Image (cartoon, rainbow, N blue to C red; front, side, top):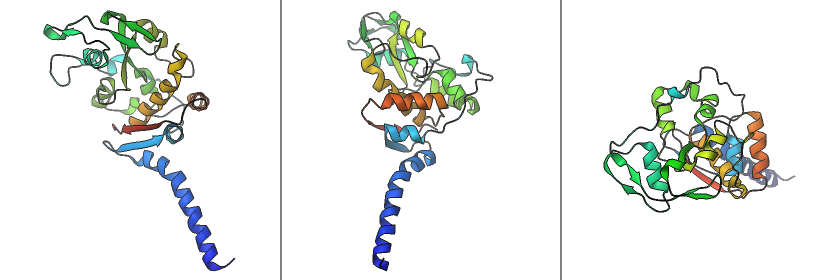
Length: 224
């Protein structure tokens, strides 16, 4: 092989490897505030795989439903206001009346806020298992009240939320099958945003689930 040909081949191989390795490397090297843009299948492969550990978990270690911006509305009501299909009336102390909401988990519309829960798409216990046990209290509070990424907290029917509880996609999927690709994609996006791990069974389930889904490009801002 002539030297010029060898150099050209080596350059092409290097470029190909760079394209393949760069997304994973970038995701691992991202710092808080950095944007990450990846096809969801690449984002899944970039997540560290390791066994989970729930030792020491208590829900109270994640202070939630705070009024971070001190506008009189705590996190729950902020999500209800943001996600309303028909806007509710907002009274004193951010009391909400009227309005309507769509619960994507079970493809149902609700006209009473009390029928809804605000779900942590990746549950608090799951985040603890996946790395949040090592976080500071302030980081856990930020996770539990994450209004900066609309995928993190969603208004869903109380019935579906309580059915889900703290399960991951291995043992729970939204009853509405049409939402399952979005659910898997958003799960990976939130784990990427918060630099969380996944366990082997979770990785296998998500890999299989994405096999029937578009390779959607996810965009997140690294939170920590």
